[in-house]
Length: 435
Image 1 (tube, helix red, strand yellow):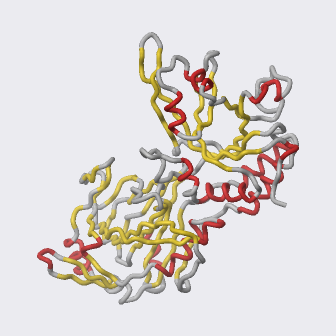
Image 2 (image 1 turned 45 degrees about the horizontal axis):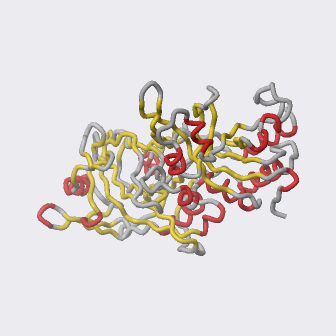
Image 3 (image 1 turned 60 degrees about the vertical axis):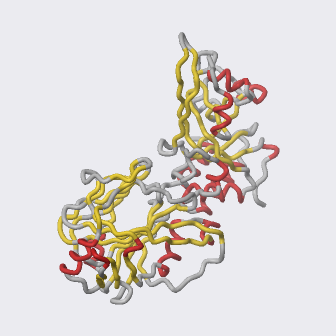
């Protein structure tokens, strides 16, 4: 392996995946775990989870209604998919205050400059999972573009089962609140905060009552982080180091053999965002919403005086020479306005100024066609854009669009693509990084 390959590998290693959540325990007492709630006939009920018995928990369960879930634009009740009870915020009041853990959540779910952002927590719902209850795999519905995470508080009601399984990017983690609460040495609530696009499910409760309240977490305007002293035990799962990533990308930039004529670094996004795929889908808005490792990459590249942007990467577009090509789009509308009633998609795109790209590999050791003696011959006059992919596009951040295709008869064609972070890299003689 050559020196350039080593530098590329170092960047890839610095982008090691990190779990998209944080968990912990928070001390509570009789007062902070106390709750008043509405019962049938508008009478009032009361419970304090620190001292609640089975009778108290069953009364709370009876006061709840069957929980629905979102399917498309509808709220659906289907006990084969979700069996649980819920209570809306208008029907209960409690003194529980999650602010002692907000600072820790900010430090673990936000990165770099984003750690100064104000986090706003909105109480969403109370849920009770009694024996036989569960919730199959799903993702939370974003309440706005500013919502980026969810916080689940599990109160100290004895239960078995009811594990929260999280899945993202081919990995799975388990949040076992029953086990955590049983080992707590003081009255405590268990909590977990995770990004909204993470798939999760609640396994069947085997006995007891799993009682939770859920908060939607919104990222507000940046301001100095402040708040009460943290009185919680939190398990941080961050393992991406921005300083290491900056060093490895800087080293790659200084290598004259890497994209000598200029081009792009490409990074596949790891997370989904509320703006993605909607009627007013806007890539610039998404750039402002980046989180986790996506945000770190953007911040590091910006600090190195590199221009970053989001693009839709469409691969394997049929071209007029019977081969395949790839393109980068600035917006969905760019594609839609260029590809109506086309006989050859790539030809139509090129006629509208949308140029083909290719996956840059170092000549001749990497897998570019060996028929070419140099990069200039393979990419004459800037006819295509070279992109060095440092992390692959992920199928979870996918975009699709229809266009009118003509063959023997008119039909609808469809292309699929991925939203990626693209970083402009100048030619060797014109590269600038932070001094």
